[in-house]
Image 1 (cartoon, rainbow, N blue to C red):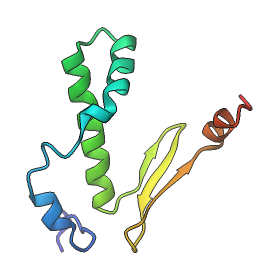
Image 2: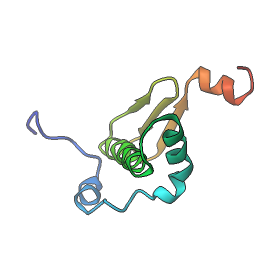
Image 3: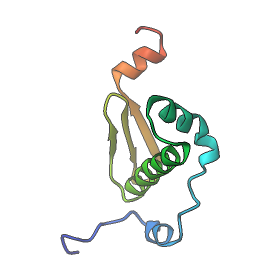
Image 4: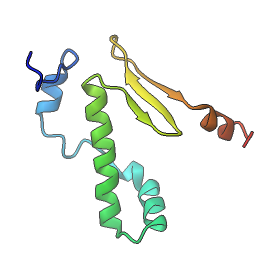
Length: 100
């Protein structure tokens, strides 16, 4: 494998090669779109594109077997048994448990 090639998990190549433009369902992310819009001067459509791109990139990285680290939130990774795991940071755990 050359340095420019990405090593994928088994069966991921087929998934990544299909049209994924409609795989991210923004209906479930509408609240997040409105939150981004309320904190920026961006239009709804611009926020929609940003949110879709973020989740598309996160999904692609996970499917390639890469770890995803979101600062102050935690990390997401897929195991060799194709299980997706998420580890939260202490800050998030404390906020969820009402300690902050």
